[in-house]
Length: 573
Image (cartoon, rainbow, N blue to C red; front, side, top):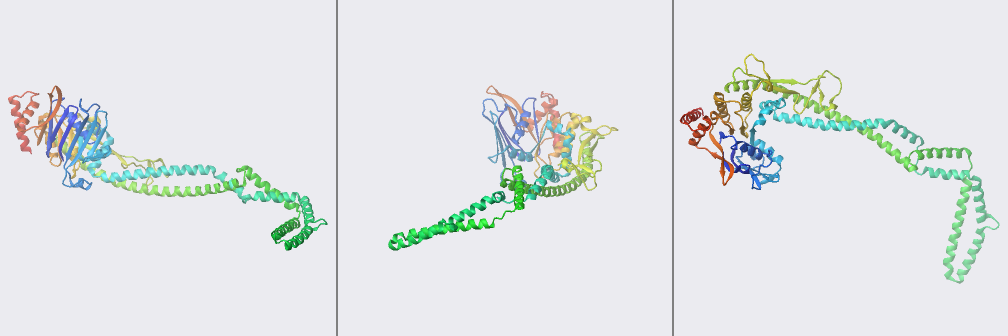
């Protein structure tokens, strides 16, 4: 419940502080006095936009603060029990705004979310919403208590969109892979047919060179061994004789023993070299077929090297890259299979929930039809017909898997159903207020006065929760007067029994039924125009009602009529 509202430097409202009571509060005032500013300030408080230049001239900041009583649900959200809830919003002259809950800064999004649960403002926008068929489903679902299931549908829609996007990306990867798959298979087969090994080209080149230079190698190796150990002038016998001389010298001069050892090592190394060259010479056998086979193998390796990067390492790297691409293609198909399975599960739950929601909607629609007709009768519209008309969207039977379109879902009965976060159907309100005339869309048949009463009937039909928001009604008396206005006032009085209700009105038939009465007046203070909101006592209320009845003149007849309206209002209470 709204306990207190404080408005500072908000256009003409320089410094207004109003205490609110439970029940029905009427707000009246002359045209231009600032009734709209009162509503605009409340709208700004709970997250709405403020018109440019709303900060009062000469002030740096406009401030609107509201104090609300806390119910059990608010306490569950973390607000302290036993305390009131303070919401404040500020707007500076440069257009920057700040919001606070319990004196702690919050984002505008947080303010708007909490504000929508505290205050329900019905102004001119609500009438335009009533004429928008896309809004009618929200009215019906609120009446049917489907908010939780609507959230579930939204969750399914969001999850479906996310998975469907991932599936499109995965399918695109698969398409690109399939375009390359033949090339991948060909290249991998080409490399595997040769089956190269690391550094194989260098080894082959060495073997080919030896075979191609067989005679030169054989002769050079023979001459090398001849020079080193087997010829008349071979080095080894001379080195053996030199070894004996060094050993004799080291016997005389021990300092030469180290040189003797080094000489022996050098001689042994030369003998080992000669032995290895001899072995290579003996093992090397010229085979023309082998040379041709090696040349052919080397030629095939060179073909791969020229094609795949200029080196054998590049060829082997390309092979691994191709293997990874094939593996990725397999993984991609697994991903697609998994995504399709998850999407199908979401679709099933989505369709099942949508069907249950549809069943509830159809049943609720029949109840709503009756409630609206009864409420309109109480508001002076006789012989009305109100219908909630459904438009389920279905396609033709198909065996296609169309869910990748993101819109069309195929259910188990092979029927295409257009699902969204709102379910599988749309609704539109139809109305007839004249006997014998079939109901038609609201935009075609409803006048301003009928829309006002229909909106009031919907307000009455919608469920009231423990934490029901304060209802602010602006222009609810549009298009009504006289007897009908009195009926509207009585309906507001009934509604205020289950929620706090504030109605801006210019009709005495409505204002006289209120439990509390506020008046917005414009006055000149220190040569500046400002608006003031005052709480009227009973005598002031009678005078205000008389002014409303007589177009601004306090006549005896008007005062008497005002007293009668007040007395009748008390009896109705």
